[in-house]
Amino acid sequence: MTDYLDWRIADFPFSIDIPTRWGDNDMLQHLNNVVYNRMIETVVVHFTLGPLGIDWQKSPSYPLVVESLCRFHRPLSFPETVTAGLRAGRIGGTSVTYEIALFGEGDQVPASTGHFVHVFIDRDTHRSVQIPDPVRALIETHGIKA
Amino acid sequence: MAAAKIENRDDYRYFLSLQTRWMDNDLYGHVNNVTYYSYFDTVVNYFLIEKGGLDIHNAPIIGVVVESHCNYARSVAYPDLIDCGLRVGHLGNSSVRYEVGIFRNGEAEACAAGHFIHVFVERDSNKPVAIPKQIRDAFEGILVEQNG
Image 1 (cartoon, helix red, strand yellow):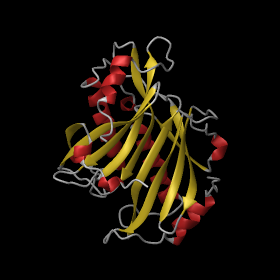
Image 2 (cartoon, chains in turn orange, blue):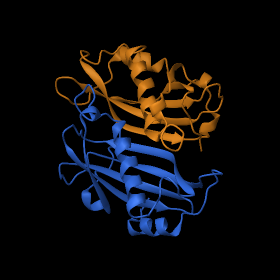
Image 3 (cartoon, one colour):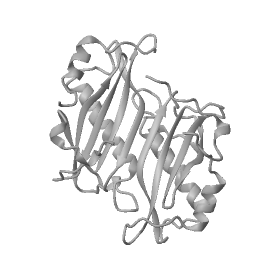
Image 4 (cartoon, one colour):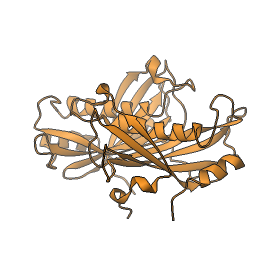
């Protein structure tokens, strides 16, 4: 069984820092569970816009989420800044599974881990399509390190 | 990729109706994927309050989320009315696995379905505790045994 607590930021070829906001905390004094999922989505979106260069408004195909999962290992709280790491896990014909970890400020051990599955959709037919070759090549360079 | 099982209204034991809000829609014109998790924690906590008698402000125990998951089959969009279906798929000593289906405008098939796992802990010490009787009884009322 994978020990998700062994994941380290160095294992993730793409990462961004995400500030927390006052309103992210709920009445239990830490980030509401939904906010962790928002951060997972955020790092995926930044990856598609940045390294993958996908234009969400104009590219002939665009990614659509079909599954997401988040594990909560320890609480995060406002006002810390969270570092979100992303790597490509399974790459299929039309879909890719991104593995994500969220690290609290200065932490080695992830506060949260999860995954996010994108399927590529043709803008005209609204059906799933093969991941475009140039995009696939870019995703592959962000895979799990051997 | 294997398609997730299509969930039906009959598969759930408790329902909470919600009005989607303008801000739930994202740039694609449908409810953003993350917002479904807000529906999940809304129905779960409402059930705990209504059926389990949980005092979310003062109870000595709290439910801590340890995992959440969602499969998205079809989109929901503001101004749809949704029904959040809830059942318990697994009941442990201190933990519970809720299973949630999101149904649009009275439809029989779920647009999205997932799970949400709570561990109950002492509010002060954060140590796991046995689920209190009133809450456990409520869970047993919506428990659906899983076959894997």
